[in-house]
Image 1 (cartoon, helix red, strand yellow):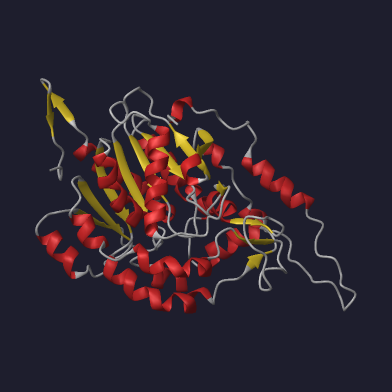
Image 2 (image 1 turned 90 degrees about the vertical axis):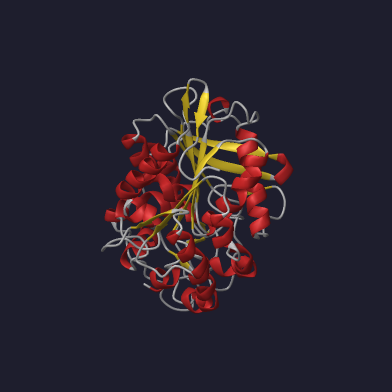
Length: 380
């Protein structure tokens, strides 16, 4: 979230049953086709809707992940949507991706495909929808998005997928913005349960900048529409406003963060009732939890007993804690500066980020020599 203010203004995975082979794109298109349009109220001419722009037609995530799964977490009252491409060989590591607030696992679709290509499927990729996001559902109230709840959800998901920590693959945790804070806090918990964590990568969030931006968030959100009249319109808005610079990624990711107007997943309000689609996770509704997401993030990041990577969208100023840590060589810093890269670094330039993550993995994967484990860079 180090550039949120700037950019916003502008289990056991292999054994889990796969969902029926329904192409998500077809489902979403059929939902769109079923819409009959707004009926005239008799109080004047009916509203005029612009036809969907075919250049922003949704794309299915099926071309980017090999599996789409629903993983039940009874203790969390959640049914979690998971997107997964397993490693080619048994024992291969897995990169676990946690999205930021308001987004979904499909936000990592293009990145996942790039990682699989660069690493030749030697390492798997797993993304998922957090509570009250995407296609994850709950049998109880899922309103609470405080950091402790999100961390507990994340750890429960890993433990449900990999029941035996000793047999689980080596994991690398990658989180964007809010998701980065979740990964940082979840890492030591998972390590206490004997899961092997090769490293933690945080994407575009710095505690100092994030905390400074929070008071301005309501002003930022005032510029966001409350809904859209088609999926294409939602995709186009994200591209035209510069929130996502990569149209292909937007065509995959955005359909997961909006829902039809009659969806029970999101309340219908006076402000969104006039649209055919509304936000799956209205960001304004997450405001009570913002203050819990980022405090102590820098110190917790530097204290991790694993390799550490921070990827920023621009040459942001680091807060004092991170600046000292960088001078001491405590983490690897990558700045993806340049045109066309904003807060959503993983969507804007998935190829470059995949190269960075691949290098980070290779530098820090455990090497066994004559029965001895040679620790990776940053491991304690």
